[in-house]
Image (tube, rainbow, N blue to C red; front, side, top):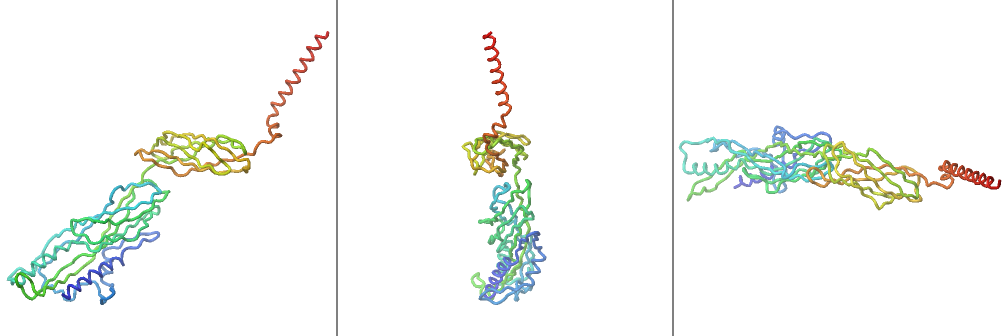
Length: 387
């Protein structure tokens, strides 16, 4: 029974070791460990488990291949894929659920002892066969997701997924939160998922006798190894409409109400419909007319929004920014909101009485001439009547 306790200690050690050696995400470069590096690490590292002696993951000391009844071939083989939709938009923060499936199979058995087996040896052989079939179970899975792209940031640390027998999938898929930058370009981007786990390498059984079909003093020695697999997890950043302001027309005077006209162009690759632009007016502006309907806008087309703006009497004559956002329906019928577009407008001072007169001197001159002409005609007519 000491070997069974020793085996449990090795299993715990392997699980802890896998947590220690998962790849770490660097700021500018992402490296997934090779199987050779992991194997070398296992062969060289010692693990201290509280309450136990220090052990090195290796073949049990009493493992004797002379007493081995079978050599088994095969190992776990994990596949990984995203649960649900893998299409996202720029600026999204999303949590990916990764489903793991173990497709490992036993590829072959080699019997090490076939001739002249005693009753005990036949019982031990049968017992060992039962253990050997567990070779394809992935033990203590730790998964790590990394992104080689600066505009996709993986926020989650390595995730544990427990153990997974062959033919089964994870009951609780590991979850990873990612952030997609606002400047991300549309396209498909494969992320790298590394899974690291232990598995049963070989088994040896021994016993003293067979009594009533049971082996007395049965001892089982299990040799564990580790395996690392790399998987590709593709995500797609959707192509969507993008807008830019192409023209601004405004006559906003201090203390007056004026019209603001803004032309928006769809510079993206997708059409939109039922687009409505909304502005956010703040001091020195105010409005009760903060929305304008733009309608359907195909790629390359423009649409104009018109707003009535009040300018405060105390406004300083300078350049101001008014934020605007476009709410629209995309080609899939989803409601979306565009990035904020800033409208740059300049206020002009209120017109004084003198400025008003100066600005209208032409009209004043005409009126004076009309008065003079009228008086001249009146005087001439009066003179004729007197004669």
